[in-house]
Image 1 (cartoon, one colour):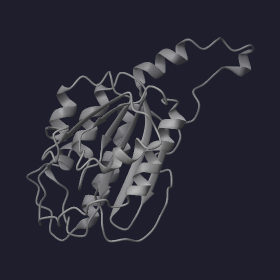
Image 2 (tube, rainbow, N blue to C red):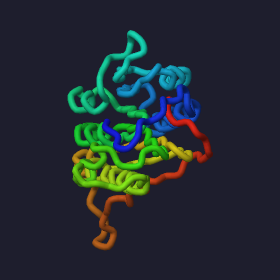
Image 3 (cartoon, rainbow, N blue to C red):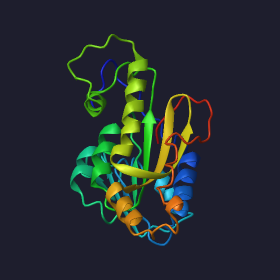
Length: 236
C-alpha cells in the first residue's frame, strides 16, 4: 500500500483486542457458522485476536498470512496478493485487519466469494493520512496522477466512503456491524455473492394473490453503529 504525504506511526500491539474478539464471536454465531468455522486471516500480526477467539469458539480451519510473519505458523504474503490467488471456497470468515486502508484487499476478495461469508476489516483514518493512497484512488476512479493539495484528510475520508459504498456492487450485505473510535473503525459484514442471492430468490414460491407479489427484503444499512469511544491507538 502506497501512502502519499507522510509515514504512519508504528502499529500499537493489542489495540482494542476485546472489541475485535467480541465482534468476531458475535458475527460468527449470528451467521450460524459455529461448528464449521474456516478462517483466512491475511493480516495476522502476532495472532492475538484469533488466539483469544479460540477461547470461545472452535475453529475448523485457520490459515494465517502476514507481510512480516511473527511465528512459524504464519505464512508470508501481502493481503491483496493472497486474496487474489488463494482458493477462498474453504473459508467462511475472512479477516483483513490491516493498519491503514483495507480497500485494495477487500475489493480484491469480494468478487471472488462463492459462499456466504463474514468479512472483517479495519479502516484506520489517521490525521497523518492527508491524501488517499494509490490503491484507494484506483478503487474509486480518481486518477493517481491528479494533484491533491495537502493537508486534505477530507478527500481521503470521502474516497473511503465511496469505496465502502462500492461493496454493494459485488455482494449482498445481510448484516453489518461497526465499532468506531477517533482514528479507526472496525467493520464486520455478513455477505453473500449476488449470484447466490438471485438463485435463492428464484426458488421462492409464487405469491398467493396478484397483490402479494414477493419482493426482495430491503437491504440493511452498511453503516450499522457499534461501540464508540475516543482513543489514540489503532492496530493490533
